[in-house]
Image (cartoon, rainbow, N blue to C red; front, side, top):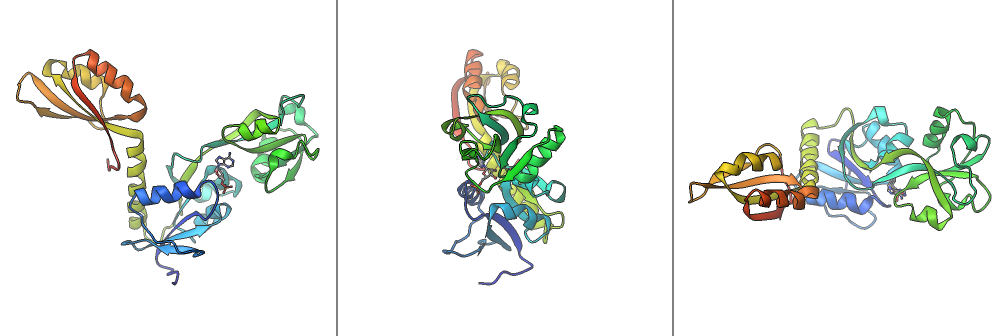
Length: 289
Ligand code: AMP
């Protein structure tokens, strides 16, 4: 198998936390490929595109340099690799949520960033940590480590750490607590400024966007007296506007509307209270709006 230089390239993590979710999202968007063991790339079925399986840390640079047209990666790594201004963030992918945070010993550690002046800080994202303390005008000695950051305080190597935190369980297990958030992060789709095939990039972005929107919305169908239609539209205005169909009884109409998934139960309660009936909620697998 050869890597054709004219074929659009999508860089996805070859390992780590974001790998599985990234591949699941691609498949849901109909971006299908057969991955061979140890292969570093795979052709996308039916499209002039290739998936590159690469180290997550390398993805921002590959996209910034145009070696890949699109990339799925954590925002934290885009910033850490100084690529913020060199790539376009096209989509927030809704997984890989975490925050870069400063943590200290829960029991007796310094409680403010200012109190870390002159202390040793262990960090895996060195550039982001250095930039944070510089912005805060707090002089510290930074120890850049590649993993197990949480253990550095217990080992006596550092007074505090700067690390990615999701639930905070790992920190707690190591007797640490967050004293300040440096930046929130989630997985994003980044795009090179000069893609090989801008039209194909757009198609890929739209496909992924369709799945992401579908994940956030559900479809609600209900019947309502025509006289209550205006009230029901206030409760659930829909993404564009609801679809209204006539029923046999001229006093009633059927409504179909997209609603935010998180609010569905609340919306159903309200519709029922104004006289809606046969209220059905169904999931949306994919959509284009
Ligand atoms: P990896 O190091 O390859 O497992 O992937 C780490 C990426 O997952 C980071 O760049 C973050 O964007 C994201 N992430 C989400 N939660 C966490 C967490 N608790 N620790 C580290 N990375 C996280």
